[in-house]
Length: 340
Image (cartoon, rainbow, N blue to C red; front, side, top):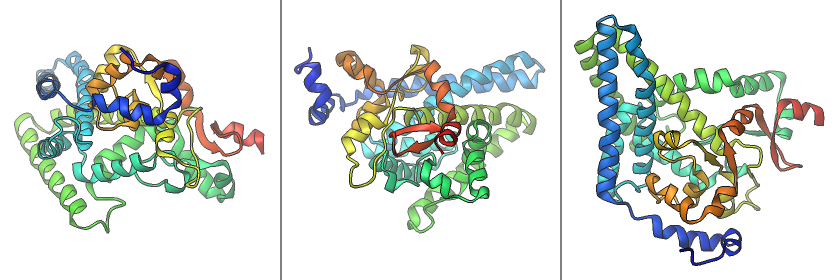
């Protein structure tokens, strides 16, 4: 039973922090089960897909699609480990996260550092640059040269953002600690050890099933999962009514609640994405395990009305590319041109 009225809860950010503290404690048996029911199906689907290729049963490659879904879920568990919310034991979370990073091609310690920066500055116009999708204001875009505008438009094009982008990010960019070159040994150790583990795993798999099966099965799984992951991250912050502010106006709790969306997905997609669509709650309290985020919405349904984006709504978010500081909303290139 809710202890405060919806009106009080909706207007009191401090009250929300107290409320969410009740949901921070993970159930370690549940966490173990979540890990098992994600890894076992992924490995099984991967093996069946490679067997289908090896025996010429091309129709069996349809299993690549659910395998990619499970790889997205693996990343979400790695994500919870990065926040220390999966087992609430830093040693266990870190080593599970590092191991899963080999499957997701993501150096865990590098990603954790960049993601912490994202959480600490999401929605702050003066702190853009690490762990974010590059977003310019209308004024910044107009000040660019024609080459700069072309580069930005290409960067924001859906084929680049959700097609070429995942290939570049997960297969190439994350092989080096981009943006952390001066961050000491940790980013380098994280990147190089993950690269070595990936190379060993890939060599063993290629030896076992052959290069053809590896390329036809594993690479599409990685690319599809990467595209889905970038799409999720995009919709979580690139929706029309999101909020950005300059440093002097930016406030963490307000930015978390109103600068992150509630991506209202069907139950099966919520499961595969680890409930990360409940992103406003996640940004308010990153220590809440993903499998408990739906509990928060169940107990406090007023949160469903804040930053809600449906599956259909999310398709319209693709055109949004620039922050209009006058109207305080994301707009498209076409709208920016009309304003000019």
